[in-house]
Amino acid sequence: VRRTPEHGEYHARIMEDPKRFNFTAPEEARADRELVLAAVSANGLVLELATRALREDREVVLRAVQSNGQALQHAGAKLRGDREVILEALRSDGLALCHAASAAVDRDIVLAAVSQNGWALRHVPEQLRDDRRIVLTAVAQRGR
Image 1: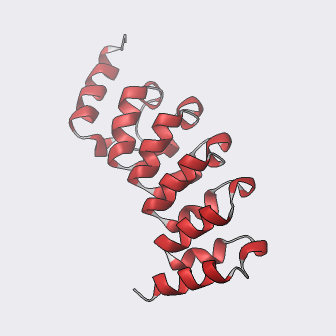
Image 2: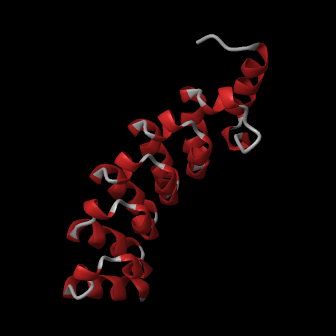
């Protein structure tokens, strides 16, 4: 990969400490897949800073939601409806359910969310709010 000298220096600094990737990142860095992968592994929420193409890259998004489930909100629309991506986000934060594409939300996804965080019940689609198992799971989780 060819990089400008400035980007090469920035790349080296970020690879040394990925948590330094932030809103000051130059556009070239936001499009650098290797750099973004390292940054989202350290802090999934910086997915917001990546280019659209990288926010639609499945591997990048999976790494981001593994680091922080709330990163799902910054994923491309198609990936917000991807079952594996949603479930991965819910493993770290059940409240990420509110960022999942509504068409992808089913009983199993809701159970995963409320199992991780009972407060996710407030984001459950209306047609599933009366499901006894979902409600009991949410209540039991909040009691921990």
